[in-house]
Image: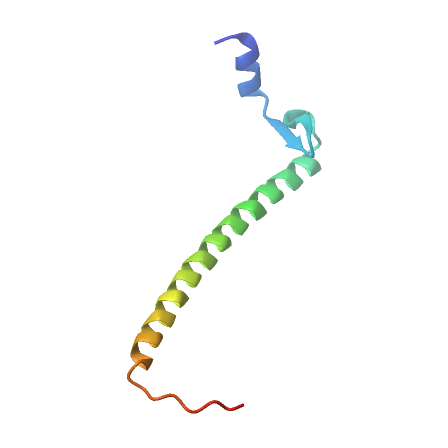
Length: 79
């Protein structure tokens, strides 16, 4: 491993809006903001996955309802 590779592993880099920053040199307040954004990103991913699961479940219930409604006579058009 080269020294530049080892240096990169020891110094985490923040890439934000196309610019790179040495995370270790940022003030603690900025590090907390970065951590907060990481937590928010993780929460967003978790909730997006939950929404996908709910959508699949809803689709399954709609298919079941559609199948069961085949034996029920619908009302006439209410036009």
